[in-house]
Length: 381
Length: 231
Image 1 (tube, helix red, strand yellow):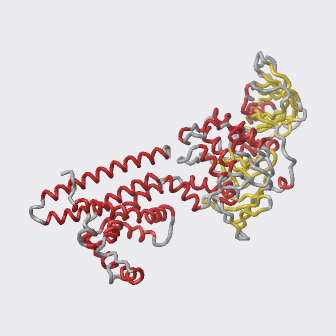
Image 2: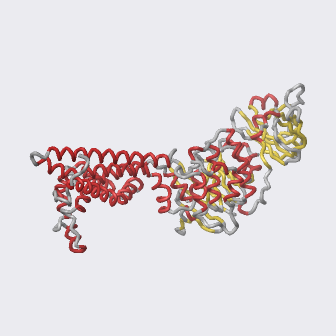
Image 3: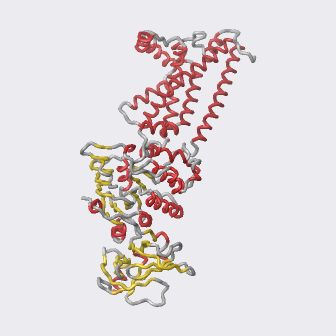
């Protein structure tokens, strides 16, 4: 699938002006609430008409202001999972699921069957229930199933986890990952949470104030703390591909090797040999100019300071090259001056093992090669 | 006391017939108008809204007289009906049904409109993304979720139609066996000295029918509510 979006819409008080492409796999639209992410996916679904521009999917034009084309939502074959499930209250789960499948002929590529969807989302026990008898997480799973069964060529997910508490959230994420793997439905996933994107997405588009601030592979964008902060997530830092080497059962600590050393993290449930990526928050990384002794910190790496970003704030972001990896550290400007750090300084980067918990560990994606669609997305005018 | 006189049976039969026809025929129009007022903006919306509400604020006699002017055999609409189809509405039970329907219409529209306005339009959007066109969405989502409002609207309209007097007697007069519904029959009896007993029997009958209708509607309303519980 290839999706091309190039739209403008004035929604007082602000203006949406975006241009991006999306390849197969999961593309995350990342940004603060109010940045215009929802308006963009609504325009994709046909629920919001842009003022001008073009939307194209697999060469078919869904919207073109110049050509006067505006395909109505029911003919776009784009599934939409809303933040608030929006199950039909007068239908039980089975009829909700069948609502879309009854109205759409399957696409040529074949679509997931009712049985497969029910199985993958584990909602077989819920079929006879009315929506108000479901928990928030169950409701969202049914909503995902309903959208999948309408035979979409693209699935939009608008913060599907935002209304859930943290525990439920981690219950649903594996299901989204299974959809990605088993049904290969391309997904545009809207979120303001770095953790979710790390778990789910391959590509990301950073939306700031209605425009595209950056677009590219998740690992690249996530390693730009400035971009992540601009999009409103203070959990900025580094994303590092790792491999699980050992698991210390006595302490519940996993050893993860990366291009530059070995991380010890307190994340249970990891299997030896798994290829993962971990997110190290910049503010969890402290720096020292001599090797610290007698400290509780388990991860201490030799490194060289790469860049120092000083925006006049009390905090500064420092990139530290550790072997072939880059670990970002956020320290105060005061510490920067006291340690006398600058590009090329030799430092020791310290990361507490407890700082990398389960949500900070995501799958390494079998990301498709970055095609021309991916080079095209540019910063809006 | 238990066996009803022919006159009483006729009054009950006519009342039910007139009210059922009035409600049944005006219901689809009522739903359409309620949906228009709830979901669409168009020029003249305020005027349509006011027009529909006129029977609530005007004396019923005025409505009856207006109906007579419009639908009488020499009226603009009545004349056309007579010339084209040979139908006369005035002074017939159909006329009584028209009068009852017009009087009950605002109540019906109000109830249904409130209930349509209470439906989350986002559910309708969700239905569109699942492949349902606007008409499909109306019948598969909007209408079923309006269920309780339709029940309430029908009950209110039926009650209003059952009790309709002023517009009816003005428009179709009191023609025995044709337009003598319960209130009109009762009014007739009350005009004649020595008929107090018969009048009381009609009063009791009216109360019984009203109770039965309320009871029935409560059962239906409960069933509808249970079906869309959580809505």
